[in-house]
Amino acid sequence: MTGVTEFSLIKQYFTFDSEREDVILGVGDDCALLAPPANKQLAVTVDTLVAGVHFPLNTSPADIAYKSLAVSLSDLAAMAAEPAWATLALTMPDSDHDWLQEFSTSFKESLKDYGVQLIGGDTTQGPLSITVQLTGFIEAGKAMRRDTARVGDRIYVTGHLGDAALGLKLLNIHDLPDSTIKGACVKKLNRPVPRVVFAQQAADYCGCAIDISDGLVADLGHILKASGCGGRIYFSQLPVSKAFRKSQVYLNQFNYSQMLLAGGDDYELCLVASAHNEEALFALAESTGVLLTHIGEIDASTSLSVINTAGEAIAVNTSGYEHFSDE
Ligand code: ADP
Ligand code: MG
Image (cartoon, rainbow, N blue to C red; front, side):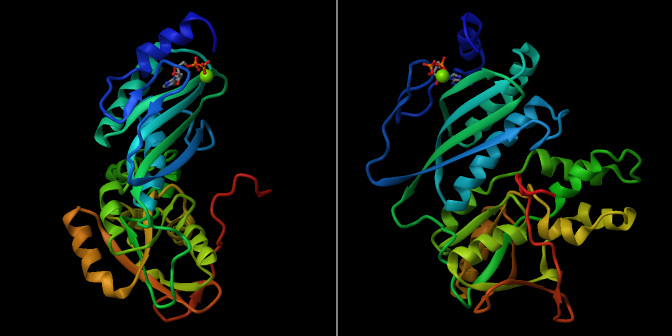
């Protein structure tokens, strides 16, 4: 966008009070000037949400703003980094006041909740798309990485799986006998809670994690590949919400196993840790109010197996959401 409207728009909707001392110069100049802590490493991540691809076209501006920040916060959590600075590249078809006001209010609120400052961005005209780049801090050597799983380690997940994938399907269903199911699952789809506080402390007990954005099997698969090992997960141990369980009673047209194992948008963490640290990890989960479930083990095989209660391997479609696949 060019001309006076762009600058007044940035001033009106994206210039928030300075809250962090490490931001020397925020929104308004050609670059932001930042004072990174001398004794930490920077963790940097960027994610784009495209309307109609990453969220349905009728998603509210407040939910879009929340989620565009949450998905990047989830990446920082997966590395155990402490969130600090954000940039926002916003492409939108027109400059609609009501839309911008709602987006801006929600974005500002989420920034505040996580102590993050918006330090710059870009504003352009085109199909709606939101890119958030986040920088966080982490002590050298403390980041949870994908390549550190070892044979014998245990596999854990936070929260519940499958709710967001179910929520996406329920958006188009209007005659559910129990409306709390849809409410809970759509909330998980639009407002995933990044496990930021838990993750930073979990790094004391756990060197390996990933956030589940493309489905458990696909994302755990990234850990196994990077670490050069295999693993097994026990299907009956996968954490399922009350809403998900109830939905299975009312609606039998969905493939629930697939949603649990390969549904996207969970934004939970999958952690791999030594059994020695299990007690400490569970105590931390409890004290930070996060549900943590042991779901499997890393083994010396070369692939991931999903095991049923009879001890047999279940076949699953292991691919997560793939933007450039032909299917
Ligand atoms: P330039 O043309 O020099 O890149 P811009 O006009 O793109 O400058 O941006 C002016 C200032 O406003 C910069 O500090 C930039 O970081 C900031 N900015 C632009 N768009 C946004 C946005 N959506 N959110 C936050 N800051 C923004
Ligand atoms: Mg620019």
